[in-house]
Image (tube, rainbow, N blue to C red; front, side):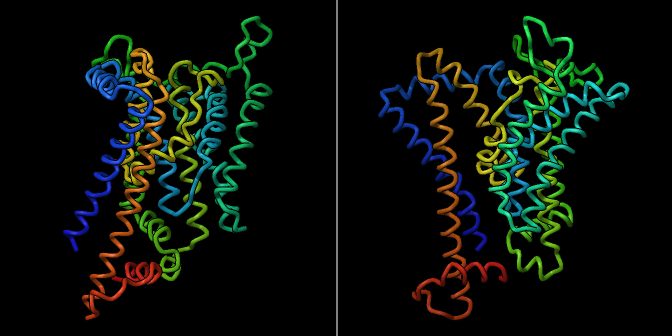
Amino acid sequence: MKGNRLVLTLAAPVMAIVFAMVASTLVLVLSDNSVTDVLEVMWNQVTSMREIVQTLNRAAPYYVSGVAVAIGFKMNLFNIGVEGQYRLAGVVAAAAGAALPLPGPTRLLGVLATAMLVGAAWAGIAGVLRAYRGVSEVISTIMLNAIALGLTPFLLTRYFVEEKEAGTVDYAVRTDVIPKGGRLPMLDFLPTAGSARLNTFIVIAALVGVAYWALIWRSRFGYDLRASGENPNAARASGVNAKQMTVVAMVISGAIAGLVGLSTIVSSPYSYTEESFLSGLGFTGIAIALLGRNNPVGIAFGAFLWSFIDIARTPLSGAQLPREIATIVQGIIVLSVVIAYEVVRRLGQRWEAAAIAREIGDSPEEPPPSAATATAAGAHP
């Protein structure tokens, strides 16, 4: 069985990579684009320190977003509302960062805490609706996304807008600028390439990853959460409060989601503006969590890969190649991963059911048990 599990563990990523490479090559050939030219652009990007620094800077918020989604996945919750949670948290945290009467670096802690509290509160609404009213978290988070996307510009223009800019010709809708104590410095002591500088937000992303690993795999709460996600009935029978776990999982997911957009607030331009604030990170986090299989290291690889392909758009345009190739490749990769892991999962279930049948003396030629029987057998080996 151990040998089979090792084969299955290695087979899924290999199948996904091979399928993604074949499908991407086919798309390039059918669209009359040179595969060699695209690979040359990618290789130049790998060997450029400036491009690597930019890739890491962009990967950091992707990673945080992926972790926020993954926490929900571990509980079988589909938190599709990360997009609204981090946008609402961003505008409130930026306004609080400028207004809080906190000395020195404690202002930065205040910004981070505010963002986490707002994200947790917004996601907690969906958690309470799911736990105590049976409302699907997919539906509720979609609706909360729509509300947050409308509420954010309303709060910005009505309550948080910078008063000094109001009435000027070059009017910029933004919050007040956060004082120095609330800003993240750049990692200038590290080697940089040209004007590219490594953003300190990557340190926050790393801390989020460590906290996620410790919470899910090294704590009693994480064990209960994983048990509730894999087998709710068994978890409930062992004394786990499923409703409470649902609410807490959504609150933690939302708290992490609140940090997603801070890389463009506590770093330059030190305020919230619709033009500079990154959008779409919540939906990207879903794809990255799928790529990383909810594993903290896997999510890191997924975030880096997604960021790498994003950064490739500019050199692709410079080489007279369509930049849309990057989007197509990203979609193919996600599709490949989902298909490969589903195929491997079903194959693993068949192997496991056959092994159990051999142990109890059944003939291996008999048809495999149903999916429900296989699942029950897997829960009680």
